[in-house]
Length: 145
Image (cartoon, rainbow, N blue to C red; front, top):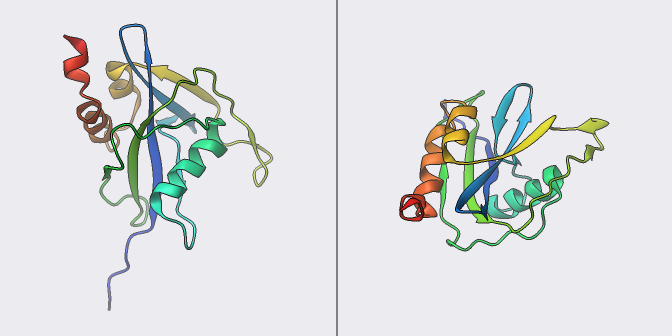
């Protein structure tokens, strides 16, 4: 029996600079906080899927991949699915949670812009390494000094 390749979802760790530091955008669905993400569609690259998901879930369209297209991914979860994340900045502070036409309601019930410590506190243990990776990418430690 050949092992199945994992199903890939793709998302973006969306950050914005505010005051003296970086804030992370988190979305809440079913009491779980995560970054905007969703399944990669057929003939779609993970990066294109990640950008599409941010637009669909938050209406943010001004993503800037200032640190390139580096990514990280979680280990397998939920029947072999893995989530690949990129990091991008935005200047948009206001987020909208639009109605998903398939669900007839927004996919998420709440959003928050939080600092590094807030993100670590809110996300699940599976996503914490993604927060830590993104902080290294944006050089958060250097920003704190």
